[in-house]
Image (cartoon, rainbow, N blue to C red; front, side, top):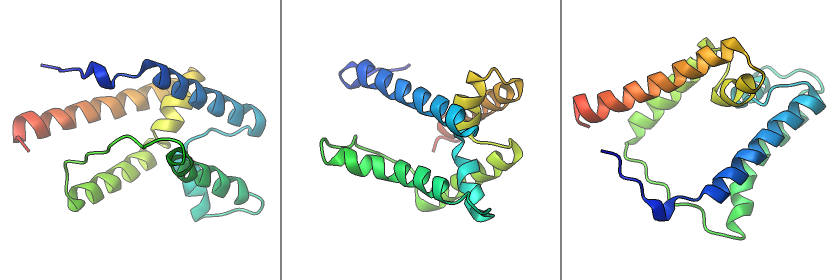
Length: 145
């Protein structure tokens, strides 16, 4: 059974956040001709090309800096992680491996690719989601962890 905490449901901020992500991704594509996929942006720093580093560092600094700036005005939402460091490390490695096989991450395929009506991104996003659903089901209901 799903229990929704209606007191924690914030459709206004969720809508505003979604609009900001959409506007940012569209602007990034229109102004730079690039997809706002985080794994590709980060991966580009591992094999840097000339005149290609500053915007990548600025983009990633914005991802890290935004919550820091938010904390100046309001509390960050509480985060609860019910896993130990080995599970978190394994999950991170699996996500990294998955982004290599899928030639992109959830932001690149799910936000940018779907908005461009990319069939490849649709398949990738459905695969991400199905794998996530299956993993949660197996861990919570079959293994019982």
